[in-house]
Length: 216
Image (cartoon, rainbow, N blue to C red):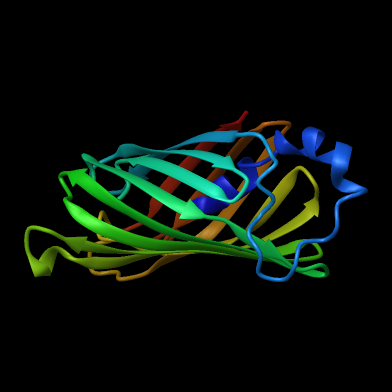
């Protein structure tokens, strides 16, 4: 659920970066992000209300320093699962900006698996597209393996507000639906972001996912 991660991670690097930004040459296309930035941290909670199912809260914590990306998750791959990842940030573009983070990690607890993944963002003017995908390769049985995906198409009419459409493929909930979709909205005050996602609105399988995140 990374837009939250994309929105929150890296804000604290702006002040320190501004001191040398004017003299530094532009990064080459496809090169890793600058390593001189300090650590940037973000923590986000996602309380989830499932109609006719089990309610729970998942959490994501990230730490970034230059191109290095570290990530830990709770109740993400499944309820009761824990997971950790290491990745590398790449970015580029001018009018059309892009960010790409390949990930390698693993899950334990109720899900025990090797988990390669990818987080990607495209930005153009006030619009952005975020995609997060991973393949959960179960160590217990082949039938327990699955592909997970989360995507968002967002628009910022003003800097503090982001609205759009989200979709996801998950095996935690959804019943017979292999793909859930619905609207979302996020509001940001400084380092704090609050938002909500409404999947399958009006149906018997509707799900509401709240979010509360902070960057530091």
